[in-house]
Image (tube, rainbow, N blue to C red; front, side, top):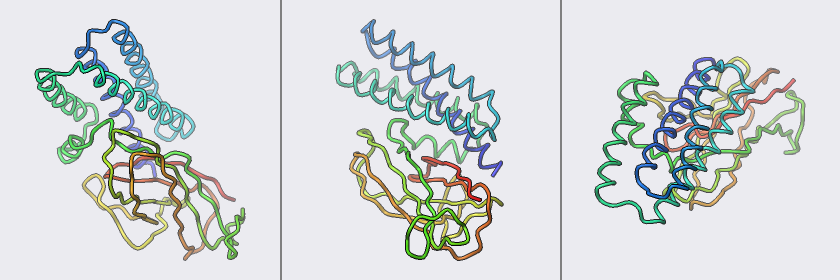
Length: 254
């Protein structure tokens, strides 16, 4: 769990760093002083949040959760400016070539900051900042044999995980496979009998579900049938899609 928490924090730092650099590049693409000032303010906010994240310990769940919510907000604001700048038709062929150059510099800086291996850097190149999905409103509910909510682990026959994949007009439409991992207090995954590739390795999943994503908000519900004794303590739910961790949350059960 500590290793996963460190990786989660490092990925957040990478995104904050890329977003700050993206704001810097966008300011070179337009001549509107008002928008440039707005971009500068958002860039400064992003850099401030990055510095806060760097000072936070990976196991400080409360602060990590707060900064993860801030990261989602920063991403949405960045997307809105990308759309706005595009709608003003400020981009031309020379700027597109400049974007390619800066994108390469961003990926190089990301690798330096993160200290990741070349395989992760290659994967990061394929991930568009504005197109990454986000999972919010993550909930883990215990169900008894009558499929009714219960607070007692001993009465639990199913675990229900629900979450919302937020609206994203820049993400490509199509079928997606979403993987859900539930880790018990000992850090072990409640296995669903399969695995999926992530960060140059395979991770076990508890549940998976195929969805059709159209860019609009969609609610996903998954179930895990209890096949082992459940121990009291902290359970961690992590959501993955398109090779990225798109959301996570912890829950405590007695």
